[in-house]
Length: 448
Image (tube, rainbow, N blue to C red; front, top):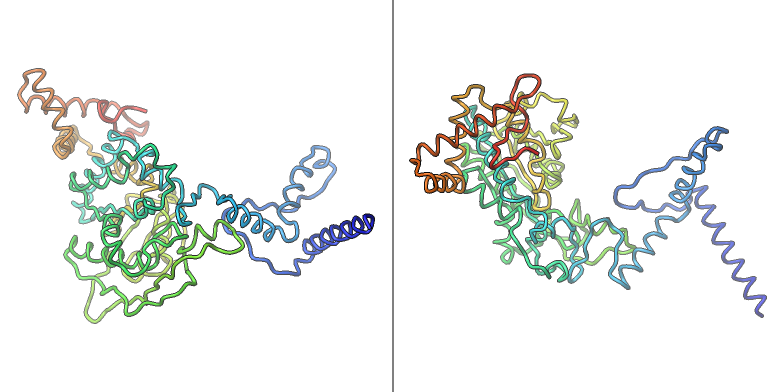
């Protein structure tokens, strides 16, 4: 009997290996691909040289592992067991929250203040943005900052307790949103707006298994963006809205993106989502502004759905200030473009990011625009720094402190501060003779 059991087990295992190998050779059973970003290994070419150097062996192992029959199903089974029994997952940076709400770690890090870049660095960016905004306005170009929603801010009640044990300090989102308004930077805060209407909407703005705004939430925000642009530029745009909603449990687009990325056998159950049937009324002549959007992945939804293409005459999207998409299917590297020429083709430059990405916001735009629009003469630079200092209450307070310490008049202390800033700044030159990419004020913006 024991021998029979052993023989049976050997037979079953052998058949399984044969089935796996047969699937590897024929791919006769169609198996869904795994979600996420993976390095693809191709079958290496064998030669005497690669065999002796062991390069063939190094590449052949990963290739076999990646192409073994039923690999994707086996991975999903493993992931499902780990999730169902132990609430574990193998997806990079994914956090399983309370009631199985899914987060990504960088959202929680900003919400709790762990990724805060500090007031001095934030002030530098925002003061420069205010100056750039003023320079662009002289050319009738409006610069706008938009804060996309963040899942940690929107659903803090579902964040695991272990991430909140040390409390919450000031975050990039809290500081950026408050300071930008204080400085008079054109700002639209979708995060705050959606949190304010969280309890009054009927359908998810942030899906349980997604990390981006839902299609429904994006639609609400795009309607607000149209209204904001209309008031900012004194124009009347297309009548954007929707006539009806389709309610379904079959989620679309990015509404279940983190859930998909966990590669489970069965996705975590989630609430039904609403999908608007968008409309673009054109009963009377309307204005379609030319818009350049520099943003993280949150802009993919309005861009990829065609909504921004219907609303704007120029629909350019610079993804993380690296890849440029022009709305006509063309793609470029931002570094290869004449950035000043591109900036000045547009009526509006929109800088958009969610809380998770504010530590690197706005992704390189400031360095370019600051260099391109930096004043040429000492007199112009003095005027610029006077405006920058006066726009920042904390900087003015430091000047007042200097008055109390030295007995100088306020005007004298202010002029000394401006001259110091201009002198320090103009010592930083590029080889080409133009102003350095990063213009630094030693006290506030130290050389790095």
